[in-house]
Image (cartoon, rainbow, N blue to C red; front, side, top):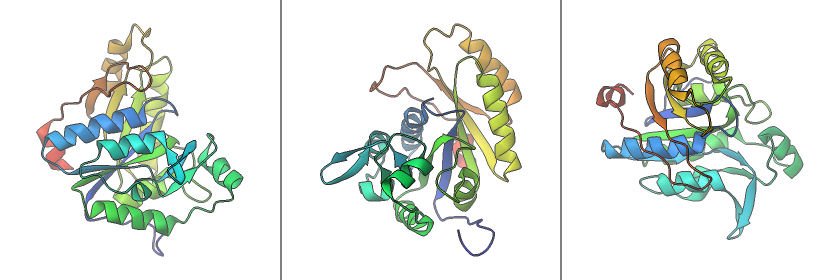
Length: 236
């Protein structure tokens, strides 16, 4: 981190996208949010700074989620900037880095983000797992979020237990000195009959607006669409 307290406001607006857990659709939601921002006329780019679970493609490790973010970005940057740290093993990034013998260079992550920010109006930076899962040894989500300016969007996987997970995540985000600026509901369980009721409860209790609820899609299916309040976009 920088030599001060690590807080830095970057030139382009940046938002860290986190989730109530792993596997609840952060990438699916980020792709939908990128599309919604682009429909408002913003140049919006996605970033996955650290990704575990990669395949060897065209001479380098590449991650499926990072590729989806690259495809959804406008303009479309180089893969190396979208995903500077690509780790083969599909496990927690800290463990995947140890297994690969990789030490995460935070300054290199910042530099890659700066190159993306120079191209865009808004950069969506997708984390790994939930808010309190470490990104790397000595690097937490709140470190990265505060470097980006502190704005966070929370993806809530709509299932039993999501009320507690979402509310605890919102409290932790605030306690870590960051700002929850919105949340997205994602219907990850097609059999969850009370999803609408849960969305209602979350809308009443979470301290940020709901940016939309995405329908269930099968693995590899097209992301749903979000329709953003122009006032919310203008306030970013």
